[in-house]
Length: 243
Image 1 (tube, rainbow, N blue to C red):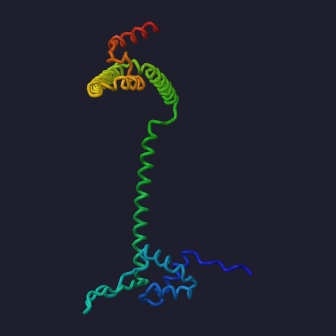
Image 2 (image 1 turned 45 degrees about the horizontal axis):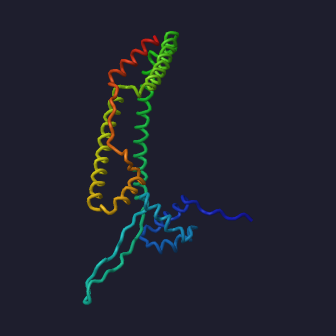
Image 3 (image 1 turned 60 degrees about the vertical axis):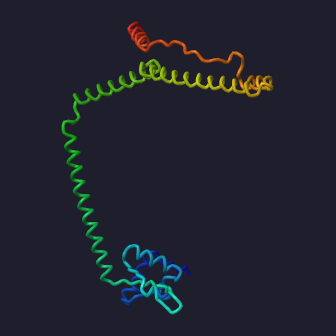
């Protein structure tokens, strides 16, 4: 004997809606959980099915009851009861609204589709296959290849670009100034240590050597750099010789 197939979610939704439509009454969730099995929907799944209907606006819900009241001993908070209901007319209105929205979307899509076809046809004009067009496309491809080759060649000379050179020159000057500033700070610190800890002179000298501060430690000199104009002249001269 084959095992009975369970209801799909859509079938469960239809069964729960039948409960509302047949009675046209208001229900608590626990009441729906008792009525669900009579329609073939197990009580454990009723809550999720009802919530899916609420999310799609096919079932309405609201809290009904008194939330607060005063008593001689103070304020008493009462639990509100959540009721669910759905009428055939409500579902019909929802479906009609959905139908109108989908119909509007469909008309908009058809209009956009027609506009795209017109644009496509307009773009095709003047681009019909011909010998002249084939020659133009071949020439364009050749120019693009030459452009890419020249772009790659320019990349090889990026280090000699005057703007790049000036940027490197500025960065070197900043780094040189910072290095000598820290060198000056080190000399100041050494002088302070010598003045305040003369008895530890030997230990201080050993510490200096361990961290790399030797006798030849001194300020850095900034070597003269080749002007960027000279580099540009050298590049131009090299290109002319290659030609």
